[in-house]
Length: 117
Length: 107
Image 1: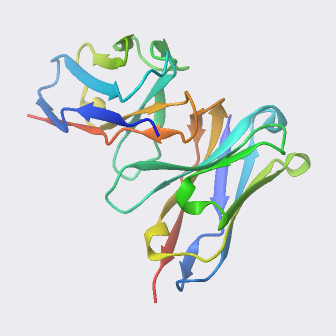
Image 2: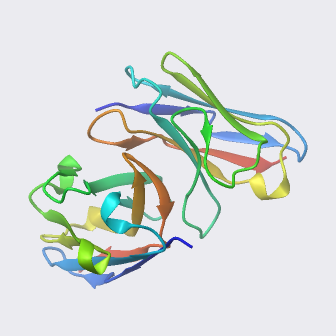
């Protein structure tokens, strides 16, 4: 059974940092693209970042470039999102998702991030 | 950036009725559109990928089609569990984007 479990969310002040983690199981992690997608309260889905199975290839939403960094540890079946210089507009539920290439095909339950003073 | 415009925003139907949801891309995306279902408090679930392929375990009442830049998700006969929000998404290029969603509600 495919499982994705996110952790690391919480409340942080503007300008602060958080590191999200996602632990995967039930599939061959190293062969899949992995994504972070977020959903602000009461809003729709917004893609944030993707890392391909080749860890050197990464893509980001323009508004998070230079602030967020996606990474993965294939030996530990883990995906990460380092978020720096957080803004109020980054407040959302952050989902880790496995990718059928650029389309997420299985999602975790999400970890909430609140940026507020 | 490719913009995906979903219509209608809300669809009010009764169980057993047919639902037709639309997603229009602002430029050509080939067939690289997926559809997702999200029920309250739950993570999204992939229904359709590459415009017309049902994901594993998705009932046959869900189908996808497209013509040019117009994509359609059809639910042939609504079951109670189908009342939810539906999103389209493209993977044609970067950035990946989602449509704004269509809420299918009980009439």
